[in-house]
Image (tube, rainbow, N blue to C red; front, side, top):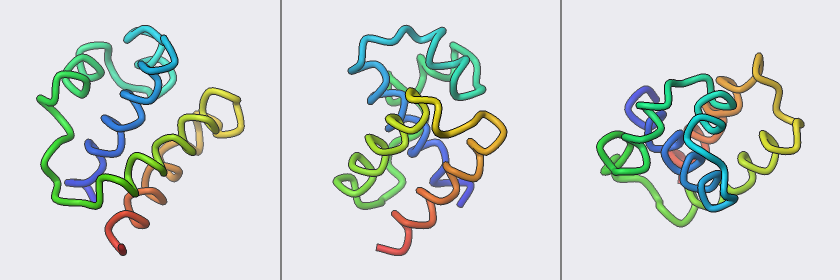
Length: 91
């Protein structure tokens, strides 16, 4: 799962960017540094994991909505990410 997590974070960061969120805002919501978000967006981190990209994008959209709407709480965020990891690996 650890090798998939950066891909999930990168997909969520891209979804948040599409919603005109700043890297600093994304970093605060995801609990990572702004530098990590920058690397996700520039494909330095979180690419090439060999997973189903269409499924990952769909799940990233859902998770982004949960995070932005406040339905996914910061304390539970890691579990939310792992749930997406498990889903994309199983398919």
